[in-house]
Each structure stands twice: as structure tokens, then as C-alpha cells.
Length: 426
Ligand SMILES: Cc1cc2nc3c(=O)[nH]c(=O)nc-3n(C[C@H](O)[C@H](O)[C@H](O)COP(=O)(O)OP(=O)(O)OC[C@H]3O[C@@H](n4cnc5c(N)ncnc54)[C@H](O)[C@@H]3O)c2cc1C
Image (cartoon, rainbow, N blue to C red):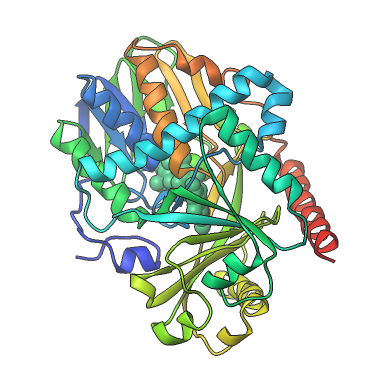
């Protein structure tokens, strides 16, 4: 059965293909969740575990958005760097927030292992690599993390890196053995199946066209139906449309790109001799990993604020790849695609209440696998009255993201970062 996913490596290789109905007529639930990406599904799943009966309304298919087409790298941190978080909410809250992101990594692993989600088995390890010759601050960063969070990185020198990667590009690095990588679409679909097993319902091909979220009874209308519940959660990520204008104004859609190679295990092994994922330390970073046991190379990077052709951007990604590994010049790119991330102006996720009984959980940017896993849990705890951890996100509200000017500023910032990266590496 072919489901209406964009043509990505993940859609071509997903494990199960159950199709779900569109919303027809009136449906009652304990809570409506709009958006069937990771933010919406984790929230709905945790609410179902807490005894509520959720209904998820998804415009396309579960995991159609960023959640089912990303790099699959699960590691701690937010898209926003720690210093900027501390500048906004102070050191103590910033550390508590970072701890959440570490919990998020463990939560993803626990979902996959506990639910026995097939085809998403975690593959351990992430190398954070530096493209210029300086290591004192890197070592200091590792020592600080070990002290503050009990989270250990292993420092890698050039020789250590060369054992894994046949490239002159990298000088120093930190290996993170707790991070891992997965097939994200199988993960999303595994969560969706568990939600249904617990009595939650998911409607696909059902774009929400009207939202009423201020009265005691919340209503979401679609072309052929209406869902009603006392609680409502918006989880529409980088695909947030005009359904709730306040949300749309708060989220900038930023596109990013991925490509996957042909099957060429020997050629790939002439360059990359590790199953660990790799992330360079550029502010505008590249990330990549071998998949299918080394048969193919998956490579991601670049952002644009205007839709660009994925095949065109893949040419830029290829230049990066061949710059790092000249021996891969003959490695054919089989497929490329793009996806939209949602970014707030403050670069942090926006998770909180919009009205009594109505919440939003969005703007996870380029670091959404671990952060959706923990933010969905934290939001569910708040809705169920189980904890006040949601207050940690209070400093990051639905600030206006600046519209077209905000997008232009984001693109300019990215170009500036690219220039700074280039300068540092000189
Ligand atoms: C190419 C790419 C690579 C990435 N790599 C990584 C990575 O390696 N590691 C990492 O941690 N993060 C990565 N990310 C980021 C991560 O994928 C996202 O932060 C995360 O998936 C966001 O989840 P979400 O549920 O908020 O949004 P989405 O997954 O985009 O889900 C939003 C859903 O809402 C639905 N929707 C929107 N409007 C409506 C409506 N009106 N009615 C009904 N449904 C609606 C959409 O159809 C969509 O399915 C990457 C992102 C991209 C695009």
C-alpha cells in the first residue's frame, strides 16, 4: 500500500503501512491533538497512558512533516544554544532545561525498546567534529558537561578521528556514546500504533480548517467532520498554517535538506569506517551517517527560508561531502528531499497554554527528536495535573517571529554564520 508520503528514503523503507481514515461526522474525545508529528503523537500517547482518550487530527499522514523525514540523530540539547537560554531565563533554569533534553534522549530509546518498534533500532554514537585546530575550549566544554550533568564525552584527537574517518577535514572531536540514530519514520509510526492500542484515535487526510478553543467545549472542523473535546493541543510544527493566526505569527518555517546515496558499501568504507553519526561543529553544520549496515550514506545540511529545489541543494551537499571525502566523488546520489522545521524567534520550543484547556507544543527547530519526546511528556504531565515541569518553558512564549522580515533576518543570520565558519576554518 502506498501512503501519501513525500518520496524519501524513509518512506521507501518503512516497516508497516496501515492507512487511517479521514474524520467524518462528529467525534467526541477527552482531548483533540492537531498535528500527527512527534510533538502531537508523544503528547497524545502520554495523555492516553494517563487515562484520557485522545483524537489526533492530521492533515496528511502521521510523520508526513519533519518528524518522518529528518536526519534521525538523537542527542541532547535544544536548537538554541545553552548560553542564549541562560541569558533569557538564568543559569539554574537553563540547566534544568538541558537536563530535560538528556531525559528526552533516554525517552526516545525507551519508547523504541519498550514498544519493540521494529526498524527503528537505535545505533549508538555521535561524533561532534571540529574543522579547525583548537581543542582547549572543547575539552573545557566536555569537563563542564561531566561536572554539571554527569554526561560524559570522550575527546578525540586527529589520530582517533582518522581511525574512523579517512578525511583531512577534522582536527578534534567529542564522541557521545549515549547519542544514537534511528529510522525516524518507523519510530513515528510505532508511537502512532501504540496510541491506537491504548484507545486513542488518529484521523489522517484531515486538515483542520477551523478551530474554536476559547469556550469550555473545544471544536476542530475539517472538510467532512468535527471533533469536540474539553481539551485541545496544537502541534503543527513547521507546517503551521493560518488555523490559529497567533500560532502562525510565532513560527518561522525554515527548510533543510537531505540526500541518500546509491548502494556502494566498498566506496563508502573507503571514507567512513564507523557506524556512529557525524556532526561537524559549524554553526551551519553538516550531519551524516552510514545506514543499512554501511550500504548507503545519508547526508544532511543547509537551510533556506524560501522553497528551493531539493535536487539543486543536493549539489551543494555533494560539494561538502566531496570536500571532506574526495574519494566519494563517484558516489551517486539516489534521492534528495527537504523538510520544514518550525523556529521561534527565540529559537526555543514553544510549549504552554493558549487559553484554559488549550495548549500549543511547537517550534522544535532542527533538534526535535529528543525534545519532542520530553516536551510531549511534560505537557501531558501538566494537562493531567501530575507535575509543574511545564513552567520551565514559560520564558519562551509565542513571540511574534517577524513574518517576511523574520524570514529574511533568519536567512541573513545563516549566511553570516556560514561566513564566520569559513573564516574560523581559514
Ligand atoms: C530534513 C530535516 C532533518 C532534521 N534532522 C534532525 C535530526 O537529525 N535530529 C533531530 O533531533 N531533529 C532533526 N530535525 C528536526 C525534527 O525533525 C523536528 O524538530 C520535529 O520532527 C518536529 O516535530 P513536530 O511534531 O513539531 O512537527 P512535524 O513533524 O512537522 O509535524 C507537524 C504535523 O502537523 C500537521 N499539520 C499542520 N497543520 C495542520 C492542520 N491545519 N491540520 C492538521 N494537521 C496539520 C502536518 O501535516 C505535520 O504532520 C530535522 C528536521 C528536518 C526537516
